[in-house]
Length: 286
Image 1 (cartoon, rainbow, N blue to C red):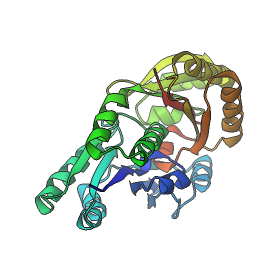
Image 2: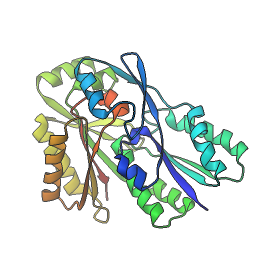
Image 3: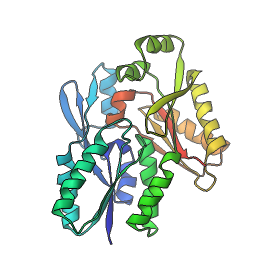
């Protein structure tokens, strides 16, 4: 049976890859200084560069989860057209979006009992979800059935490695990830927390280093030590620091066995919580 891949706008996957794998992306709303803006992968309402420029100008941004009605409105035409849906959600460890998708699934299954709607908690965040969807798209293109792909996702979701650092600790502090004292002390000492995602899809601080260079070296060492030798794709994601991302990409290509390194941008939904200067690497662990 024909089926459509779907995810949400936190995936931070470049639009050309979204289009290549025909991924239906559920848009998400962020509120910038009181103005509600809907974010799509094609940045039609506000470019990512303009968003970070606004943050640097002192504007504040908050986000909200997707409501079930948004899913229903987007999924109904696909189901009506005779296709099933495989939706891979932003981690339930950081958002209630997955639960909203399950509510929509229940309502749509009553309306389309002959269709299959699969909703999976990715346990992945931001470009980690985008990286995972890139691999999922390749599996679908290879001819994998929706049932087999569901099994593959559940098997692999805890092996998606997320490693990132941020420039502005006060964004993490506002989101409750650091105390005010930790943010102030860390900023004064130029300390970079090395942050990852645990087996429940929640953030945790793995280590702390001094300066951007040490942070990047730490992430490169993680790729060298733990990357799956059968899946050597790496994503480098950045929050408005493209030059650093390009330099990191080159270092990864020269110092690890990664063979397919992509650059992607952290969009406004995640950027609202991490701020400008976030740098991340995403890959599959062995």
